[in-house]
Image (cartoon, rainbow, N blue to C red):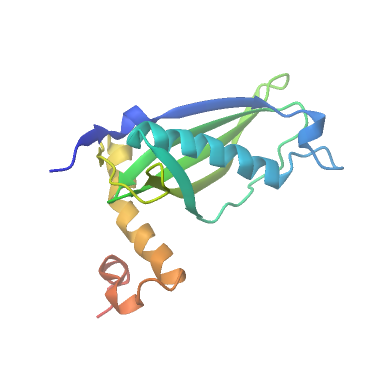
Length: 172
């Protein structure tokens, strides 16, 4: 039987100040810089869950809901949603705050997939993720569908074998 760990043990909060070197010519945070920060926060979450070295395997759609301005404070929150054999899905949300104006909004959300590896870079088993809250359970339950969609899009799973996706669309 696999070891089990609560998903709350993988929770990460990372806070950054948007400085001039992080911005484009319009004084907005550069998308590549945002992806860099998201990858770091999500990797820390996966490492906390697995207690292993992890590598990024995939990133789901990352859309930018609004520009993040120079001087804003960004808060990244990441947590493992589900673990498979050696891979883990991590959900990440990014919040932008204009401290002087007292405004805060969610600017980004995505799912990252990481694979735990040994010292030789070979995949290694990870503990099972145990959700406890209603939100954790909801993310956990959706993770298998998201995983199957990733595999279908990557050409590693034929759509007819994606049983969770077929059930979602009631395909026969």
